[in-house]
Image (tube, rainbow, N blue to C red; front, side):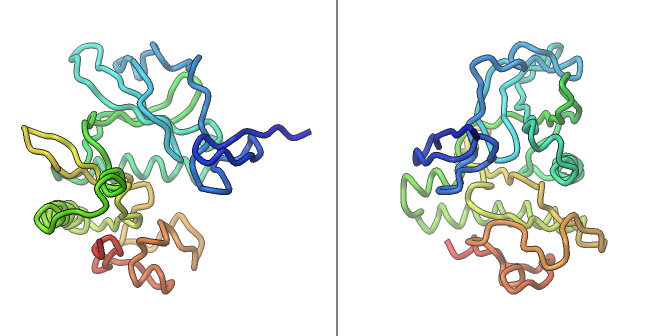
Length: 239
């Protein structure tokens, strides 16, 4: 008999092997009470201290560099995805893409490696704040001044990425983080370059005619099945 679990969001019952709730799309909650990574040192330098959250592709932990005492965030690829070659390559691409882009609105990557049980991990700067989708859910709409400030910063990050040939193909409120930095609120950090496309090459990680990203925020090019290049306008700019 196939075991089932209940979604932490909508309480819909579904098979335990699924990664997402088929009813609302919420990522499956993973067991964390006996998390084997808490208290472990990764890469001989990062002490994993506590769980911060779960995502569709990985688990986020708070950690500290054992020598420099620098606080970092560790993103570890889920066990199920660690056996998926495509997921592994996207995770690796996120690390290499972000590390190549030199812009203060892009999350800084400190390290990339494997956990003792073989899962891939990213060590990156620890952010304090919340994502734009959380803000919009709470406040419904933003003032013109605040929205303009956010979009200008997002534009600066995208300009830097486009300058070296990368196109972010999943630009949406959930991937825009409003951090507090040097006393400034709403300091933007652009997240999740796992679906980024290197525009200057023809190599792709997806099959031809496959739509990648979040449909509600597709650019016109993505929605029509055409190539999403540097000039693509995301639906995010309709906020």
